Length: 428
Picture 1 (cartoon, rainbow, N blue to C red):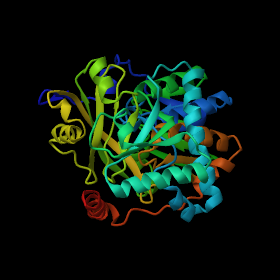
Picture 2 (spheres, rainbow, N blue to C red):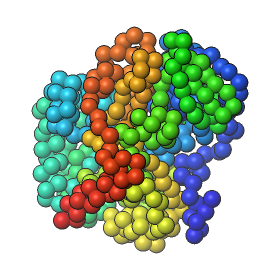
Picture 3 (tube, one colour):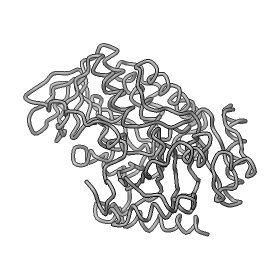
Picture 4 (cartoon, rainbow, N blue to C red):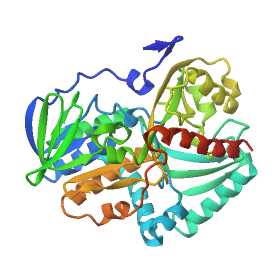
């Protein structure tokens, strides 16, 4: 699909051969656990449950990785979207530290899964947050101090402006916080690899099978699709922003925020390496932020356009290219070949929202832009909880969450007005 000569498929999908769709659910199937959503979280949960001997059926409306997992900026970053001081205010210092430690474990787990299951997903170590103005320089310096002194996290280092050009060939940034423990990858390759590993362990994935409703029945759960149903002892809802009417209570606690990415034409190894000599993934720390990295075939992937209204702007590619040229004006002669969008599922407090709707019904949502690594560990945590060891899952379940204000009609306009303030703060 093209618009003005630009391919509107995610580059991740265009770069890989199309896979035949797995069979849809037909009739009735029995399972110990039914998982709704075949993104990283759902596939990780299916893998870890199947490895424990559980019978698992995964229902996916489209194809594995069709949602955020196969569209994202794909930077695997420490922590969660909510700042540590906010988590401490929400759940106390002890639980906030436990969440931090789990987020670091998530990065290690991702690398372990890639190696254990032979997932060829172009993983590269190294990620950097960058400052644009003096206030942000102070924030990065304080962040580095807190991470090393309070959280014993010593893989981060400040990169002053004279050395920063050795990482990012741009005049825009004044200070960097580099993390050797974070990284980036090709997310569709990764989630497809997790899905294959889950199937190898015994899980069944049914594509083209939207979960319409679920009902508690006879000590278990019945999940209905258009062509059949799954009877299971337990259910995991891992559809995030795409669940909608399947779980209205959850839908009221997250908001699907549109985010947009472009991929340039192939730059060639020399030109791509000159932009980012260490192949580091980069994100600034504006509220409406820019993020970018190199691809394995020597393109620049650049994101930074968001739509809190839920509308897809007509000029997505042009607007994102304009932001790219503010960072890399030397790319003024370069064509955009792919431009695509997707939804980030944000919570009101930006903390992840994990929990139970009933003793038999678990859910994972609200990764708020920090999902590439955190979704994998979330799947493992829920598998542990289902198998009887719920302490670490319950740390996240204790985070309080509220619905977005304004109800069905006014929640988006209210959010748009709130975000205008943050955007003005960036500009000023």
